[in-house]
Image (cartoon, rainbow, N blue to C red; front, side, top):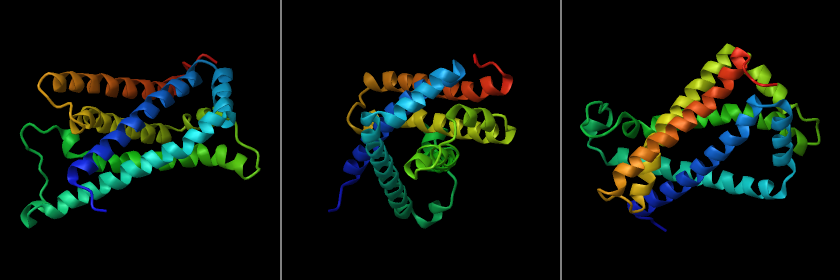
Length: 218
């Protein structure tokens, strides 16, 4: 079945909005790490044992795979459709188009690489080990050890900044793709997009900053 470009954009938008909800919820849970070891460990224990969370994991993975697959296919289709002389040109001065919009695919690659690193540092040492019947590493100790490494903190910051730019454009663009693109709603959505992106940026970066400076409560 061949889907139209509009249908693909809608699928990308809906899957993206689903991932934005997860991103916000994940932030709330992670912020408990700077409040209390006990709180963070309790949250991790809840996520490991709650049946609803376990059922949501494959849904989340599916949403991510759909978003990645359709976004990649859409980007390559647009690239293939460009005239030969424009394929390798960097459009850095396009009027009315933000830097985020022009670099969504590159930002997406950085986000994916960050997710892979995040899974290696946390999921592979906790949930995967539990699935294999091995002893899981302590979640809080993992956070402390990782954020004691300045190199990792730098890589983490780059990842979060890439997410910031990606969602700053993706948030309002997703609603635009599903029809909320009139002159009344578009400025509001662009404003909300900036607010959401800044909350994500400040929230996620506050975690390594607190651990690096020793400002966590516990």
